[in-house]
Image (tube, rainbow, N blue to C red; front, side, top):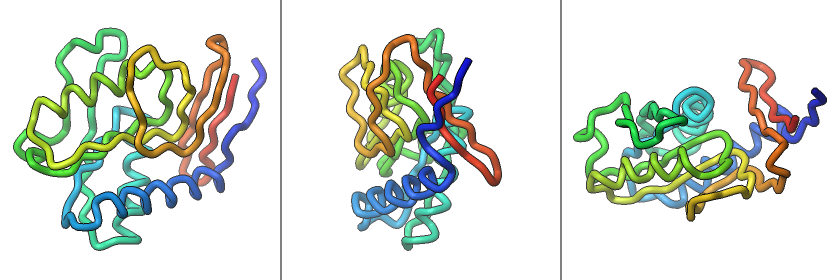
Length: 165
């Protein structure tokens, strides 16, 4: 299976910085926000964004890991923070790749069951194959692919990249 690199490590770093500034502009009046990453790659991406936000702004970025069963999205969603910790807060829901929108929309639904000040969504790559009407507020790259192609993001300590296979 061939791999076509669509984002290099440097490009991912630039996108993280740009997204962090966009989040800062949106939450400029907040002292603390919740950066909720969808488990595994979404959480890694969320961690990188949170670190960048704290580097560029006077906002405390609290990380929250969100665990969603991607095969059974109606199953209960688990978060590393309890509901009271993000109630009436600004929340940013983060994932690495937006395919059909299923994971993101069920994640949004979960957070909307609690009163929030604001909810925004972030993905590194938006594939434009949505089956739900989910809009991403901040994205690194919008990419039109065929349904047979797969987008993978690899987060390594010194060399992160995204590829199409």
